[in-house]
Length: 172
Image 1 (cartoon, rainbow, N blue to C red):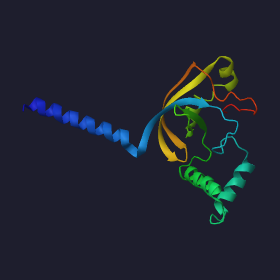
Image 2 (cartoon, rainbow, N blue to C red):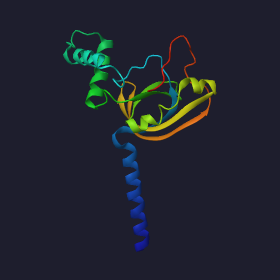
Image 3 (cartoon, rainbow, N blue to C red):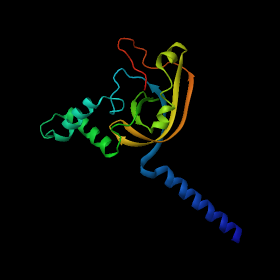
Image 4 (cartoon, rainbow, N blue to C red):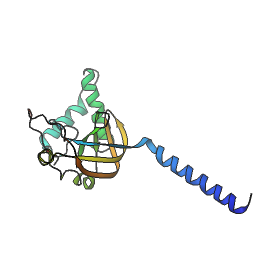
């Protein structure tokens, strides 16, 4: 083999190694879906009054976990993850994946500002929806942390949900 061939082979091996390491780092993955406006917007203390925040924190930090039912244990486990990741007051969105499952994605304020500008009723009136592609780290329990916001585009389609039985809030 010539020196040039060895250098080329060596370079290809390094690029392949870096690419595969980057893809597998801490379970990062790319998800894509439609912005989902839920009538019940629970996932962090973002924009919540201090009185509610203090009551929930007090309960979560002092409750005897041996005495709570499995549903509350799940909520407490989710709280613990958000607390550990410092996401208790971070903004989030609900994203409806192509599999029809819905996940919560937590964002930095800068990335969240690129999404919250879209108002649900405007999208419904113009028959548009917001398509989001983002690199995330899975946190479990249907939650993920945004690593990099890849795209936010307005496309033709139906913004979900269409149900008008409940008041559906915009992201703020």
